[in-house]
Amino acid sequence: MTSQTSPFAPRSLGTPAEVSAPPSASDTAATAPAASLPAISARGLTLTLGSRAAPVDILKGIDLDIARGEVVALLGPSGSGKSSLMAVLSGLERASGGDLTVAGQDFTHLDEDGLAQARRGRIGIVLQAFHLLPTMTATENVATPMELAGSADTAARARAELEAVGLGHRVDHYPTQLSGGEQQRVAIARAIAPRPDLIFADEPTGNLDVQTGKEIVELLFARRAETGATLLIITHDRALAEKCERVLTMADGRIVSDRPGEDQARNDQDHNDQDREAQAGAAS
Ligand SMILES: Nc1ncnc2c1ncn2[C@@H]1O[C@H](COP(=O)(O)OP(=O)(O)OP(=O)(O)O)[C@@H](O)[C@H]1O
Ligand SMILES: [Mg+2]
Image (tube, rainbow, N blue to C red; front, top):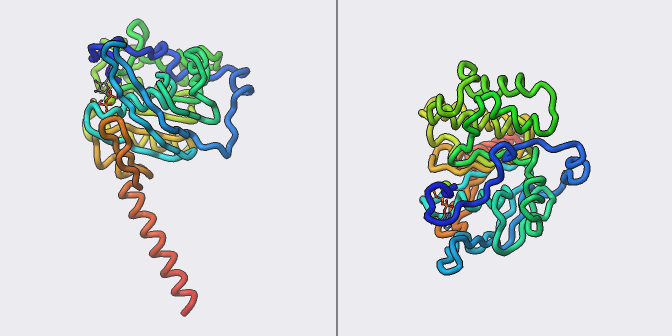
């Protein structure tokens, strides 16, 4: 997200606490997605920001389907529109044009309140700038989205999530008392704590050393495997991208490449080889 560095008006991000807040019981009953629907379906999405005098076309027609449970990497040079696309797909930003359905909900026609409600509990977001609440400790930051929905044991759950990201010894620290990488891990814990259907992570390893980055990615992948969540990761890390099932590349506001991750393709090839060998064995 570039709202902090942009010379233009900042985007409306919702409050940090509700970025991944869980649903209330009534939200869930009214809008639970049907199992067969794709997680994300976008047609001709555009985003134009800036002033009327100097509009900037940021997304220039995005067509994209992401299946439920798919693990997708989003690559592309700086300024190509990755964070902007994530903001639109996650409902933090309204598209300027096109159609967007997320988890069965038509995002195109929802206003800001509607989008905030649609996000709650179903969409976990790790922003490029972490947006932690400065007056709250790490535990309180992670617990708040769960508390908003009246979940029980939120402090204990928050501490367990912080432990999982290696911050068991920093649970009572305020964001200013945490390093950049530690703040990033709090943001990740906050996003995954409510067990959302969709997890969006904008360069989740950007501030982490190689080993911690690896552990955080493993945690994200493990959480996805556990819950069947759809995972979209923006990254500049090629090795991480190739671990994903699918790799999208953006350039100048468009998706210019859409292919399987190399590790995934290799696994598929290995399985095909094994199937062929098994069939050949059975035939002989
Ligand atoms: N509020 C805004 N108003 C006008 N232009 C904006 C605004 N926010 C972002 N932009 C522009 O949109 C383009 C895409 O920005 P975006 O943050 O999506 O890029 P990115 O691919 O995530 O880049 P990075 O890898 O550096 O994070 C940039 O050229 C940026 O300057
Ligand atoms: Mg970005």
